[in-house]
Image (cartoon, rainbow, N blue to C red; front, side):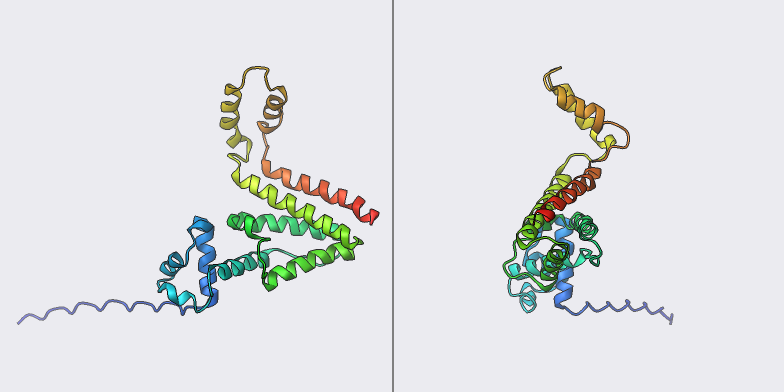
Length: 227
């Protein structure tokens, strides 16, 4: 009688990580980053985690609470340097916000939408106001400065992620198509900008961010002195 070789047992399936608020939050962030915020539903999130949708409500009462926590997580990623100089601190913070929003572009329209902001959000706003107030801005001037800075930051990032190009190489086919469609001599300044700036070697639209940021920070000095 032949001995049959025993079939090796299948390796045990590794246990799923225990569902937690932090695990749900991290997966929600992953789905939103990958597929956009409109793709994030409680049902979709449950599928990604391999659980029933009802189990998510043990950790988050509803999707709005989940979104608030996701926004708070994005705020927590933003660097808030020590206050040595108000201008350099605000500059570093503005650069860090842009980097965070590049990772989480879905968050741009939601950053200031929370009526019950989380601790990281509140810490962030308090720190920025601290930079301004300790830097010599009056309460009113601090409000004006904060509004101007964030309008520029959010607006720039929103435009940047929707542009059809960033570098000169990427801009060349876009500009060529536009120039072909424009009647010759009809739009001289637009043509000049395309030919003499955008299509030049080394051009990158992203470079405009820090140039504009420095112009705004320099202008805020006048506002600070005016009180």
